[in-house]
Amino acid sequence: MEKTKFPKGWDEERVKRVLAHYESQSEDDALAEDEAAWEDSSQTFMEIPNHLVPTVRELLAKRAEKVASKKTQQNTDGITSQSS
Image 1 (tube, rainbow, N blue to C red):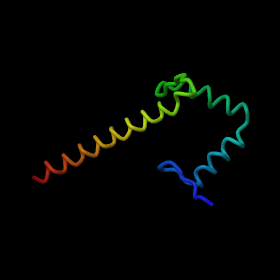
Image 2: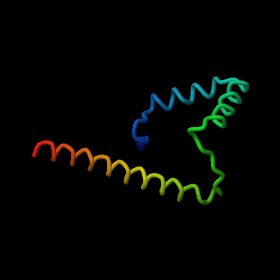
Image 3: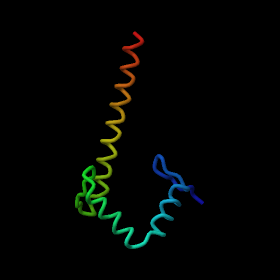
Image 4: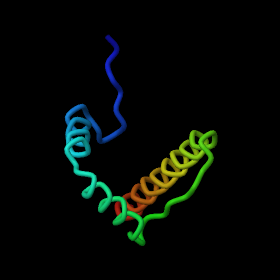
């Protein structure tokens, strides 16, 4: 049997907890959670055609890598200049 690969920060236990949460949630609680998400000004919802979703995910992942790399470089530069 092939071992399941999880995204960074996720493991089987976390997946089970999330599934348990949503499987035990009442319809009213689910609706309230959805409505709260729409009202959260720190989130944006976009309608994307299904066939473009993989491309959008790839672009977001590349952007996240670029930002993380830039932060790492800034941290390294700060350490280098402080020790010089």
